[in-house]
Image (tube, rainbow, N blue to C red; front, side, top):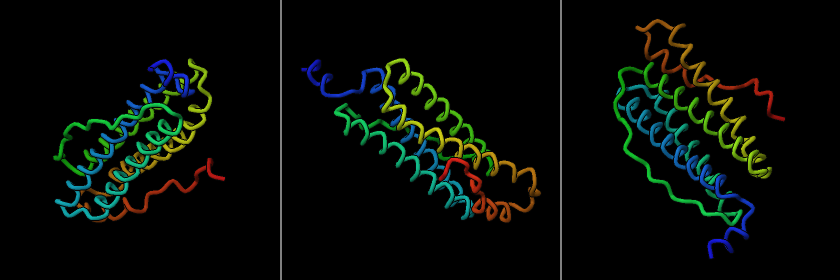
Length: 177
């Protein structure tokens, strides 16, 4: 039966495994962003909380996009186990540093999956992943710009910094048509 099921999908096992691992990574990212939002909320940083609530939803959307893709291709998508994540942070800066580290890890993972796709000649999945490459460029850019604010705004103006976070965007996106 397993061999027959494998014939029904163009997705090779290595790609299926990598995509399921990415689904888990995206859901863990969503959980981490939710924890960051909660920390910001508890500390009266409303704009940063809103930023991270939005990021949490985006990460869940990224996971679901891959989940549906696997299902649509006749492959098996697994509902991932999401381990507990830290709820406490040292400072707002450490929250944003964690966000950038997380986005860099996601970018590295997407690049590894593309390498698997190329090795397996899975051009359809590689095409799907081009969207993720563009998305990660945007995510890393925004995280870096938010961190730049910490060097530009004095530490005693935390609430001004919090408000400025909401204005950071990737306006000059050369990838949008």
